[in-house]
Length: 146
Image 1 (cartoon, helix red, strand yellow):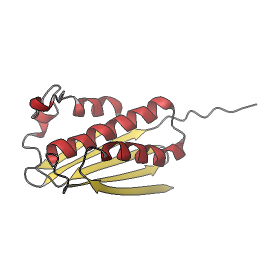
Image 2 (cartoon, one colour):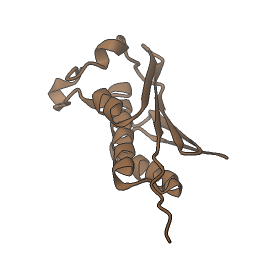
Image 3 (cartoon, one colour):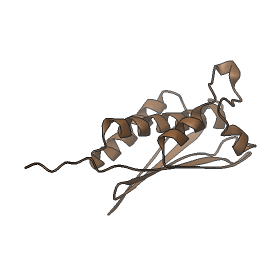
Image 4 (cartoon, one colour):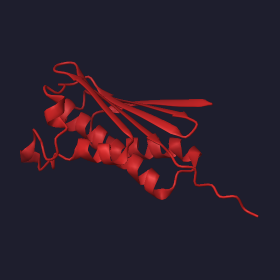
């Protein structure tokens, strides 16, 4: 059975934790283990923060869109903005690359996403925004009791 949730909110930093908790609550129905839940919350934080800081440059008029689809134990997250976009996606995916060193950004967002998820796809066009698609297959941790 397929289950889906959509969420949209203003591009302000206070909404990053709202997004993280909301996505975690939705996937909780799969009974993920603590590590899986932490991984997903972390990648949501990274992608939403990128949209707010880089996509919209902290402009609260921007809207961040999240779609979460669950099918069996596969989670697909799509985090999207219609902001500035990324000129060179491959460069942006390099560890430690940042366009905001003055904001003490580590440049590890995409690297973290790649380490915690099975699949990371980044589609972006300058002036049109960025869409990050993340997929993770959760393990089946339920044990049979005698």
